[in-house]
Image 1 (cartoon, one colour):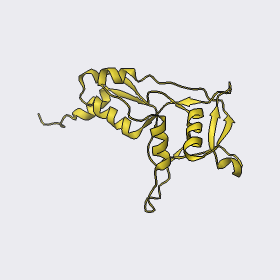
Image 2 (spheres, rainbow, N blue to C red):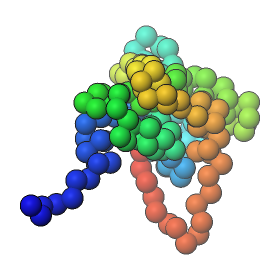
Image 3 (cartoon, one colour):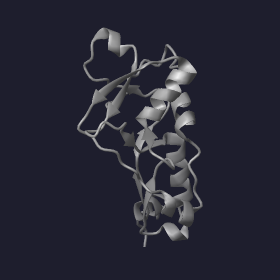
Image 4 (spheres, helix red, strand yellow):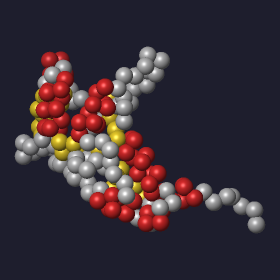
Length: 160
């Protein structure tokens, strides 16, 4: 009987759900809190209610794509859920230190109501043989080194 052809890659991704951390790719522009002009020159360092730097999970788009490719038609991926993220969450305190050391960018501490998160990507590493390539330094450098061409005026807002 005729019918539509089976789409194995789409089916495979539907069967293996990839839980993505906050994705970040080159050229992402961040929305900053409403701080005065002097503070805007620095990078925001969010602190949790206990005064500790917030830690949040991210995944670079290249790592996300490599995880998707690893999951497509992988027999161990069927009907599984995987956390796809960097091995460790981005510690905004460590990122602030890194930016100050490598680029001379100061940080501005702000109190937030947010707490840290830490996704465990062990299952994706164990079952799929997948490994993220991006760590804090590589992710930060990729974001801050990116230069959008003049003929590509898109603005992508990421409020995190």
